[in-house]
Length: 407
Image (tube, rainbow, N blue to C red):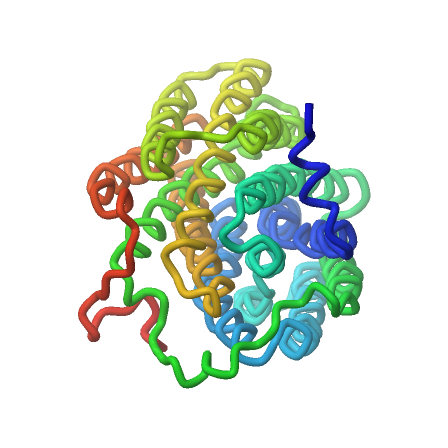
């Protein structure tokens, strides 16, 4: 029986760029959760930890699509080097500001600059799209990368929280900076698989967000991001409330593990149903699995619920990314995928900030109600957009509408 995952790595260079991208994308989950772990220890206030983490996520949400448009116009290597350099020193600045107890505003300033971090999840998918465009192998490749994303979110909390708790509060953020520098360097030096720049891309004009279908996908991803952001803050607070803050590491890892297992199976299946139908079902599962979270009373119970909730993640993002690859022009794939990640980051920022406020005001368990709201948003958005997404030909949004004011 043929192994579809072995087949996608038959092309030269695919193993190398995928492995490098794994290292280079670790800093995103490490930074978001590392900031929560770092500042909750150094400053002792979850509202501050959640707000700084949200500032980083929100800054990245609005900056990274512009970085990706620059990538589509100039090439990956030309853009990754300067943006990584700036982000690296911003992360060092964050750790230093926390350690030296610099004024609070410096934490927000460095978090804002660190938002320049490139969207490696989009960049690696752009390479796969270049290799397997309009071929069935692209579904498997996107599924593999979604599984790797979940592996990243397994390792990210382990490093981000584990290092901060076991060594010193700033260790997780410093490790994030190191992974970013090493992973990006390894990714950039692999020129053979880098997508070629379309000379007409610069003249083509128009953001991918002029396509109405993209709006539904971005808002859906925002709903999923609310779930993620809520989980990261609420799980840490819930574990601390029960006297075992380090348990947040394995609980959050269980979330990613659930998605990891389902994603492997999902990517190996050749579906006959439409992408939109798969996405509708996945968003329904995501909404339903958030419902037990506020009522769990033990760490092991929360671990089980979180694991089951993770089962909806990979199918949701595999289907969403494949839809984007079909909706947007091939020369704007990086930008299109990055906007989906932008939606997730905006949702993450809202989720982590609202959950932090709710936890401070009403207790750790009640923070999970924000996740329930996020699941409801994702499923409702998919219901409203189902008809359009089931026939994803490009459709323009009125020219005055844009996700980012910079568009």
